[in-house]
Amino acid sequence: MNSGISNKGGLDSPKTILVAEDEDINYLYLKVVLNDAGYNVLHAKNGQEAIDLFKQCPSIDLALIDIKMPVMNGLDATIEIKKLHPDVPVLAQTAYALESEKKAYGEFGFDAYLTKPISKDYLLGVVKKFI
Image (cartoon, rainbow, N blue to C red):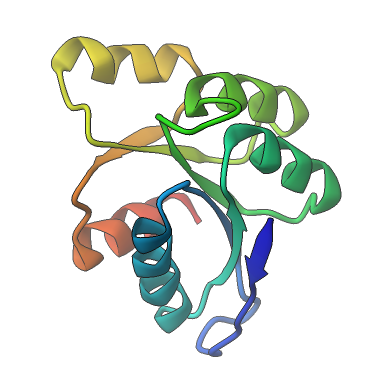
């Protein structure tokens, strides 16, 4: 677990976003975009770390969860996260974008999904819809 917390200001009370992503380059991109927009960012490298962070940091406002991760995948992690904090928005980030898979994400508790590669404007637009 690695917390890259940064407060750039600009928001009345900075929101905290958990990014569960095992690929370092993908995480670094999301961290830079979100930090530059004024969000605090926490990092989990797998689904189990994401659950552990939710237990340690109940103030998480939103989670971006990769579907395919080691140890525990994003689908199973989201089920557990929603049990702990059902009101926290959880957004899937995935390279898989088939219609059948999109429907399944809602059944696992995801509030929305973002298809990789994720553009800066699209990411921030979706995040702002939820927090």
